[in-house]
Length: 154
Image 1 (cartoon, rainbow, N blue to C red):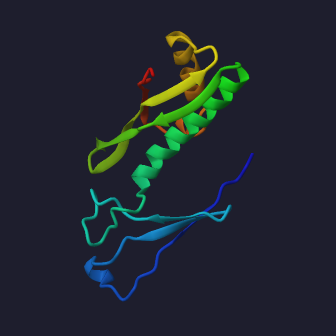
Image 2 (cartoon, rainbow, N blue to C red; image 1 turned 45 degrees about the vertical axis):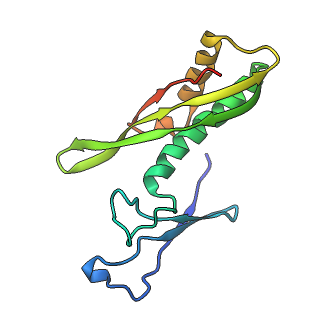
């Protein structure tokens, strides 16, 4: 199987680290050359120690589930001869307490809106495509998070 690598870099810039007054801004670097500005979520670490404009790990987690689902959906649709023209998902995740003192992204809701050309699959066929995509998604298969798919019929 494949091995995946991400380099996470952070640097203290003369900030008061021991008083917990330091920036959580950092970068994620990927093997293809992409660099993503990241930070702790402002929901967890208040400004000015977080950067709301940057991607936080929780957002990235939700996005990775959504992206993986979409990629499998597109592949399965192509295999079945279903012409997909666009795919948009406004995915969301909810942080909740899962045990004493522990929190997790307990559920993620995908809201895929797909447009088609040619013969448009009916609701049952669309549900089947999404079900198969969910079953095959590597990320969904890697987590305990409850994942709901609420198809937005266009």
